[in-house]
Image 1 (cartoon, helix red, strand yellow):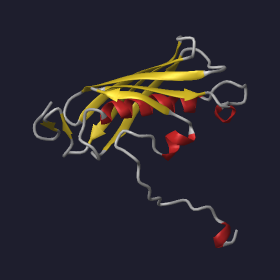
Image 2: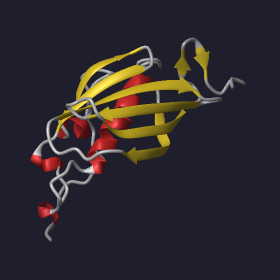
Image 3: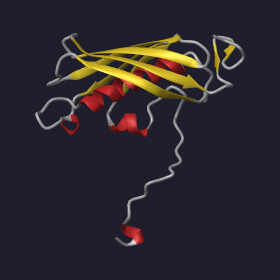
Length: 156
């Protein structure tokens, strides 16, 4: 493949419109932030044909992306803008298949020791049934502030 025919694979530079906003990947999945405040967040995402797996159900990876992003938005609502943090572990339990409609993720976050936050999200189908349970752990950068606390300064 000629150099000019190769897809550009990064590094990529982009600027988000706000601290609590969807990044390019989340926009690709058509996620919508309904609310994000005080360590809680609600996000929605439509089940479009592009998110289907081979049997016609919503792909599990899309559901996990929604739940993870909901927890991220809950975290962003309680830390200083432009702080650095990353998912270091997650667990997902699929409860029911999604066949149609719009799914909603409701997330919460709590402090879990020095520089760690614990997140949880439940994803619901458009009929209000729980379709997925999600938990995650995030590690914060040393200089991250949350509610007046600086991680990494003998906090637990």
